[in-house]
Length: 96
Image 1 (spheres, one colour):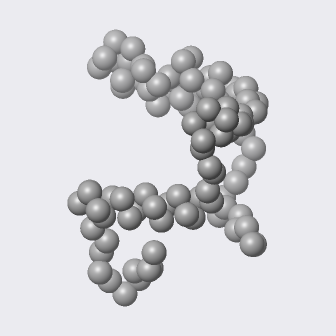
Image 2: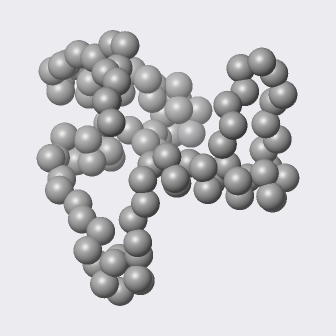
């Protein structure tokens, strides 16, 4: 399967992203008195190169991983069944 590259990709220094996040959450800090998802609270999630695995879920919950495409298909089918999402009927519609 050929993987498409994003239209725009760039490496940006971490300090500039912290500054941007701080500015982005300024209105929330003014309104609520604190920023719930701030650079200070989420920095470790973003800047630590965490390695994750599904081994525990496989072992304890009998988890069986599926492809992104299959997961998206199942999710959209569930949304339709629950009445949460109704696909548009237009010339650009893709069958799922």
